[in-house]
Image (cartoon, rainbow, N blue to C red; front, side):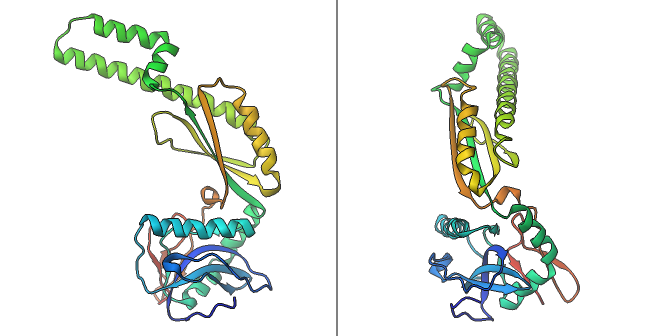
Length: 278
């Protein structure tokens, strides 16, 4: 245990899991509600938590920012398995039961991710008007647009033609995204172990990649991003971030046993808000 005094009976906010050692960690960063961060150890595993009087955490900006700040600080110190925001265990016993019940799964994840971090790479089209950019890039799009506006159709047929034009634009943009993503991944696989394609959120986004990288190869990863960027012209803007805790590479589905042997999901992708052990 850490030197921080805590109540066994107070609820615990879970931030991350990691391997336990003989050290007594002294976490400088504060958690949600400005509470002290400390460790609960069990069976060679460690949960990093803070006490709370709350039964549910609101996904407000200040709470999410505090959660991310804790994970960022922990990631600087070593490998951790981040927990999804909002996971609350009923008490310290519930945390220890969680570690015991899921020991094998946690250890397997830790062994796979130990010494590795997540790097993010976003690529976007750096243009003022993405539609006009594609019109200039693809003559077929320009031809269909001119054909539509050169006619004098009825309102209903004009609407159908505009839908056809929009679908053509979407298909060309999707094909460009796919082709560009494959080019980048082919380069980056020499510098990272796994790559996950996350959905793009904005019209000008080309790709949104999560890359699992060995901590001591971060400089090499930056070189890989630069090499990949040289395959594109200046219209493509490359922006990489990290290192982060490996959120996208965790498939933990932790369960806390109940008296009726029911399971309450409490992992990175869980939808529940608490972990019960009664």
